[in-house]
Image (cartoon, rainbow, N blue to C red; front, side, top):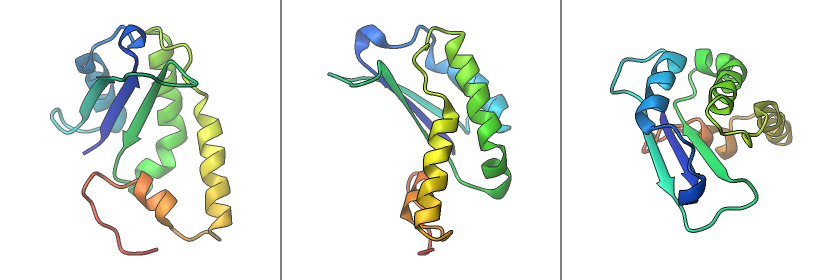
Length: 125
């Protein structure tokens, strides 16, 4: 089950509903309604950005291959709805590639945890 959490100070929460984001993500992930879970949580404080988006989903090979395009589509969707400070997803992907290189190409905790569904256990890489 993909889980998407938007964290922001109450006054900085984006001006779209969790339901709006869920409908977009159902199409983006190619899943049936009821599979994607979206939470929008106000926080006491947040820095340096006005809001933070956390995405947790099972890292199947097809999804991993499509992730750069999916992040770009999500970035464009958020930007058209006032989330202008959304970071370019290519930066995060470059960081993940650097972690993989340091790990010697092994599937380690940094990748396995980030691509695992909540509660899903993986064998050590």
